[in-house]
Length: 434
Picture 1 (tube, rainbow, N blue to C red):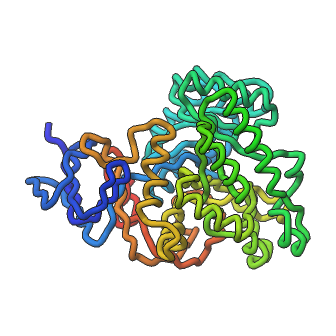
Picture 2: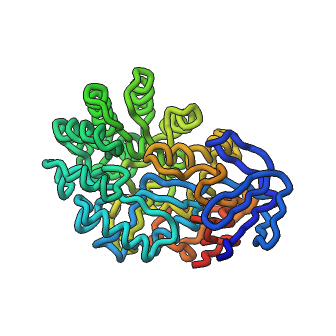
Picture 3: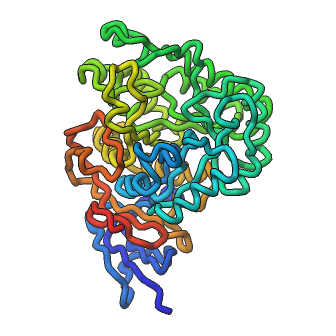
């Protein structure tokens, strides 16, 4: 039986896993990368002209909400994975705060089976840390890990009990699966809708202080220092959080962390500028410009390990409410690369190499998958990026069911052109093929 061959010609290849940053051709045979080199020529291969484009490993997102089962009116695996492909993501980790909560092996297998049937990118389920995400009793982590869970998280809710978190970290040492945290002290967060400070006062909105995040981070870092395990801190948003994480890393604590595109590029000022647009409401809230700058420096310097979108699609009704009552979160998969490239790479805040590392090699390493690389023999998960293409954000054209973004009409430079997953073209010329 003949094997499909695809030859990607003339692109500039960036592969952080191999330190490659040079023009090269890439040959895909079947579902694998067969060769990388100069002036490759293969009879019978389909040729993709990548001249003027950047070729990278497919992106890996450690934090998305696909909403299935239970909230399919917001998103489902079919629509969410197509949104991922539009954004250059070939692998995503989906959070377990569904209905029912993904807290046992049946739930994990459901997601994997549904992704195999309806998905167009690789889906790795995160299992809940506690049963029903109630924070009281550890879920069946071993069985979920065996079924295919690559991360554990009660995301959307913090694990309030230090005892439960300590136990979860201990278990993570047994199964080699990281514990991803939503760091929020509810007694401090209260009903905070925006960052506590100048904007909350001006807008008359309840504020969430940075200590709601940092106190929980400090606690979990100390627990990880004591019992071990792999602590992965979700959606870091404050300068003080970075200081705590940097100190723990220097002490040898096994901690990684992520930051979202929106916390890297937006601030609390957008709440005021937008006139209470509920698409600026999220958890953690958008912070100050000083916090944003600290996050950028930490990403550049390697204190922050990865960028993760926290893709949180909602229906129109979820957001069409008074600010304090609207659901938290924004869509992120389809705008992530363009937003980061336009607002961070082009101004020179971080290099394109570093951004690609944070979207590929680093997240793949954290969850222990083979993605994030273009080495010969690796699965052909590939993104081709047109870093010069300008486009305007139009949620009406999203593949996601969610239209909730504060970026409507924004002009961005940098577009995902073509995506291969397991050697299959799922996006070509910016348009889905499946």
